Amino acid sequence: MRTVELLCSPELEETVRAAWDRLAVAGLPSLARNTHPTNRPHLTMASVEAFPPGAAARLADLFDDALPLAVHLDRVEVLDGSAPLVWLVRPTPELVRLHEAVADVLAGVGAQNPWHLPGRWVPHLSLALRFRDHDRRLARALAGVDRPSGQFVAARSYDGDTRTVSPLGKGFPVR
Image (tube, rainbow, N blue to C red; front, side, top):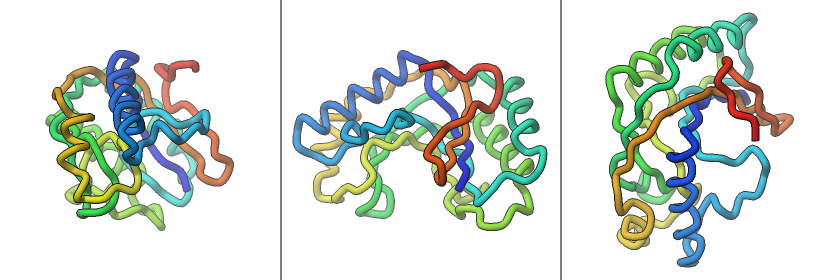
């Protein structure tokens, strides 16, 4: 599996990580507990079995032209009632156009995750992967007190087989 992800500006990343920490301190599920070096706040735009030939270069060009991109976070929500706890991202016209362009690059690729297809995609930053809906009120109070703004500044791809990331464009921050 390969993903296409947008990365947050340092300030927005710190805001999301602080929410992860508040959830963990309260004993709630949180991505703060994931210590893998690739774990960081991101917006997944696509997930496919493999990139077609030339896709990584086309995506890199796309992101070099589009980033940085303003982002505004919205409310904290549990998707599907008992799955990921997320901070919803307001789908600005620029973000929707970028998502559609990514989908165009990957059009025709088999084994795409349907959650990321245009018309079904719910842009969000994950706070916890497995969350109980009955803890939503407490999670909102802890994690989503504000509705911060920031920027997406870089793009990457995560390779689920090797558990590594690779940059998609020039703006990829070194960590």
